[in-house]
Length: 146
Picture 1 (cartoon, rainbow, N blue to C red):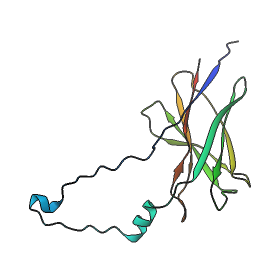
Picture 2 (picture 1 turned 45 degrees about the vertical axis):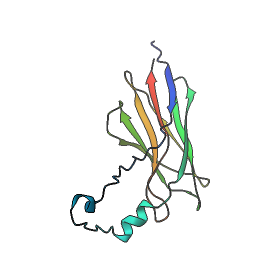
Picture 3 (picture 1 turned 120 degrees about the vertical axis):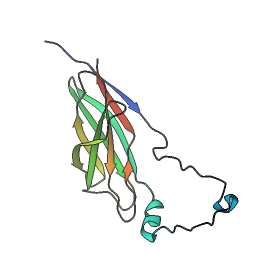
Picture 4 (picture 1 turned 90 degrees about the vertical axis):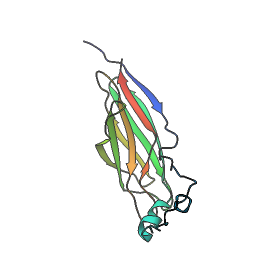
Protein backbone atom coordinates (compact mmCIF):
# COMPACT_ATOMS: atom_id res chain seq x y z
CA UNK A 1 0.00 0.00 0.00
CA UNK A 2 1.42 3.35 -0.99
CA UNK A 3 1.43 5.91 1.73
CA UNK A 4 1.18 9.57 0.83
CA UNK A 5 2.76 11.94 3.25
CA UNK A 6 1.12 15.29 3.27
CA UNK A 7 3.05 18.41 4.08
CA UNK A 8 1.64 21.66 5.27
CA UNK A 9 3.15 25.03 4.84
CA UNK A 10 1.51 28.28 5.84
CA UNK A 11 1.95 31.23 3.64
CA UNK A 12 0.84 34.51 5.15
CA UNK A 13 0.26 37.11 2.52
CA UNK A 14 0.89 40.59 3.78
CA UNK A 15 -1.16 43.36 2.27
CA UNK A 16 -3.79 41.38 0.39
CA UNK A 17 -5.41 44.57 -0.84
CA UNK A 18 -3.81 46.12 -3.90
CA UNK A 19 -2.05 49.44 -3.54
CA UNK A 20 -3.66 52.49 -5.09
CA UNK A 21 -1.60 54.23 -7.75
CA UNK A 22 -1.95 57.98 -7.69
CA UNK A 23 -0.47 60.70 -9.82
CA UNK A 24 0.65 64.07 -8.50
CA UNK A 25 -0.24 65.75 -11.81
CA UNK A 26 -3.73 67.21 -12.03
CA UNK A 27 -5.92 67.82 -15.03
CA UNK A 28 -5.23 71.55 -14.73
CA UNK A 29 -1.49 70.91 -15.21
CA UNK A 30 -2.20 69.52 -18.68
CA UNK A 31 -4.59 72.30 -19.75
CA UNK A 32 -7.68 70.12 -19.40
CA UNK A 33 -10.71 71.16 -17.44
CA UNK A 34 -11.03 68.98 -14.36
CA UNK A 35 -14.22 66.97 -14.18
CA UNK A 36 -15.25 65.92 -10.68
CA UNK A 37 -16.39 62.32 -10.56
CA UNK A 38 -18.36 61.99 -7.38
CA UNK A 39 -18.60 58.57 -5.81
CA UNK A 40 -21.93 57.47 -4.50
CA UNK A 41 -22.22 57.68 -0.72
CA UNK A 42 -22.81 53.92 -0.49
CA UNK A 43 -19.61 53.02 -2.36
CA UNK A 44 -17.58 55.53 -0.36
CA UNK A 45 -18.90 54.04 2.87
CA UNK A 46 -18.04 50.50 1.68
CA UNK A 47 -14.42 51.44 1.06
CA UNK A 48 -13.98 52.77 4.60
CA UNK A 49 -15.40 49.72 6.37
CA UNK A 50 -12.90 47.78 8.51
CA UNK A 51 -11.97 44.19 7.74
CA UNK A 52 -12.69 41.36 10.16
CA UNK A 53 -9.71 39.63 11.71
CA UNK A 54 -9.72 35.97 10.63
CA UNK A 55 -7.11 33.71 12.16
CA UNK A 56 -6.34 30.43 10.42
CA UNK A 57 -4.08 27.40 10.55
CA UNK A 58 -3.70 23.93 9.03
CA UNK A 59 -3.59 20.94 11.34
CA UNK A 60 -2.66 17.40 10.35
CA UNK A 61 -4.95 15.28 12.55
CA UNK A 62 -4.27 11.89 10.97
CA UNK A 63 -2.18 10.09 8.40
CA UNK A 64 -4.49 11.26 5.60
CA UNK A 65 -6.59 13.95 7.26
CA UNK A 66 -5.96 17.71 7.26
CA UNK A 67 -8.18 20.29 8.96
CA UNK A 68 -8.20 23.99 8.06
CA UNK A 69 -9.48 25.92 11.07
CA UNK A 70 -9.54 29.31 12.69
CA UNK A 71 -11.59 32.03 14.34
CA UNK A 72 -13.42 35.12 13.13
CA UNK A 73 -12.87 37.98 15.56
CA UNK A 74 -14.73 41.25 15.85
CA UNK A 75 -17.57 42.93 17.62
CA UNK A 76 -20.38 41.96 17.45
CA UNK A 77 -19.42 38.28 17.56
CA UNK A 78 -19.50 36.37 14.31
CA UNK A 79 -21.59 33.56 15.83
CA UNK A 80 -23.45 30.93 13.77
CA UNK A 81 -22.64 32.65 10.48
CA UNK A 82 -21.24 31.39 7.19
CA UNK A 83 -17.56 31.21 6.32
CA UNK A 84 -16.58 30.19 2.80
CA UNK A 85 -13.46 28.12 2.29
CA UNK A 86 -11.95 28.97 -1.08
CA UNK A 87 -9.39 26.90 -3.00
CA UNK A 88 -7.04 27.86 -5.78
CA UNK A 89 -5.28 25.18 -7.81
CA UNK A 90 -1.72 26.31 -8.46
CA UNK A 91 -0.32 29.78 -8.04
CA UNK A 92 -2.21 31.37 -10.90
CA UNK A 93 -5.56 29.62 -10.66
CA UNK A 94 -8.84 31.33 -9.82
CA UNK A 95 -10.29 31.21 -6.32
CA UNK A 96 -13.36 28.96 -6.16
CA UNK A 97 -15.59 27.98 -3.25
CA UNK A 98 -14.36 24.65 -1.87
CA UNK A 99 -16.63 24.36 1.16
CA UNK A 100 -18.97 26.45 3.26
CA UNK A 101 -19.10 26.08 7.05
CA UNK A 102 -20.80 27.79 9.98
CA UNK A 103 -19.05 29.32 12.93
CA UNK A 104 -19.65 28.26 16.53
CA UNK A 105 -21.06 30.58 19.18
CA UNK A 106 -17.52 31.89 19.76
CA UNK A 107 -16.72 32.45 16.07
CA UNK A 108 -14.59 29.30 15.56
CA UNK A 109 -14.77 27.39 12.28
CA UNK A 110 -13.15 24.31 10.76
CA UNK A 111 -13.23 22.37 7.53
CA UNK A 112 -11.53 19.20 6.37
CA UNK A 113 -9.39 19.81 3.27
CA UNK A 114 -7.40 17.60 0.96
CA UNK A 115 -4.09 17.60 -0.81
CA UNK A 116 -3.43 16.98 -4.51
CA UNK A 117 -1.33 14.11 -5.83
CA UNK A 118 0.74 16.65 -7.77
CA UNK A 119 1.17 20.40 -7.38
CA UNK A 120 -0.27 22.59 -4.63
CA UNK A 121 -3.74 23.60 -3.49
CA UNK A 122 -4.06 27.01 -1.82
CA UNK A 123 -6.80 27.66 0.77
CA UNK A 124 -8.25 30.75 2.46
CA UNK A 125 -11.34 31.58 4.51
CA UNK A 126 -13.68 34.40 3.46
CA UNK A 127 -16.46 36.24 5.30
CA UNK A 128 -19.02 38.25 3.32
CA UNK A 129 -19.50 41.99 3.54
CA UNK A 130 -21.97 43.29 6.13
CA UNK A 131 -23.13 46.78 7.10
CA UNK A 132 -20.26 47.08 9.58
CA UNK A 133 -17.42 45.10 7.90
CA UNK A 134 -16.08 44.67 4.38
CA UNK A 135 -15.40 41.28 2.77
CA UNK A 136 -12.53 39.78 4.75
CA UNK A 137 -9.93 37.10 4.09
CA UNK A 138 -7.72 34.87 6.21
CA UNK A 139 -4.10 34.09 5.52
CA UNK A 140 -3.42 31.79 2.56
CA UNK A 141 -2.21 28.23 3.26
CA UNK A 142 -1.33 25.47 0.85
CA UNK A 143 -1.21 21.69 0.88
CA UNK A 144 0.84 19.28 -1.21
CA UNK A 145 1.77 15.60 -1.26
CA UNK A 146 5.26 14.20 -0.97
